[in-house]
Amino acid sequence: MTVTGSGFSTVPSENVVTLNNKPCTVDSASATELKVIIPANAGSGNLQVTVLAKTAQSATFTYDLTFVTVSTPAGAEPGFLNGVGAAAKFFGPIGVAFDAAGTLFVADSSNQRIRSASPAGFVDTFAGSGVKGTVNSDGLPVTAKENSSSRTPGTTRSA
Image (tube, rainbow, N blue to C red; front, side):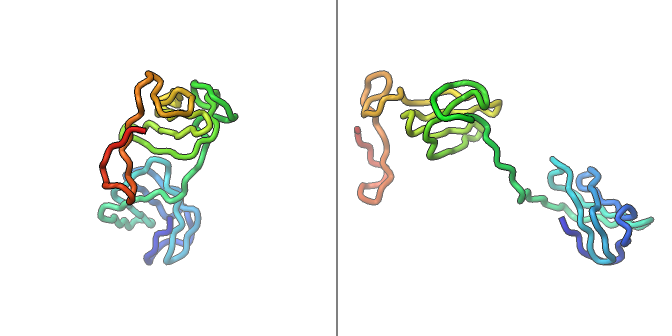
């Protein structure tokens, strides 16, 4: 993060920066700019800068994470297998969504299933039997709401 202003020390260690009372690392400093590394989970709150004996504090500072790490939470190899983390297998994931509890739902197209991955990493089958068709695993017809401009929004049709 870059903090701009005036009166900073050009010696990084003489500038003390905290966010929510969590110490930040001053990576580089000039008289008008500090390059600061925000610690993980610092969140939003008061940003405080102390240079020698002088301290300045901001109003609530909102920290938006812009660097994102992409990782594979489950399914390191193609196939079908419920399990935890990399032990689980997917084949043809084409879409994802999260619910309010943080559960990840994956459209596992080649396995003909909707899979769920809990925040703890456990992967299970949410819907589908693995057989392409127009019936659920219980043998009842599939009913879906179609959201298309060629139909009246919200109409229901049996597949």
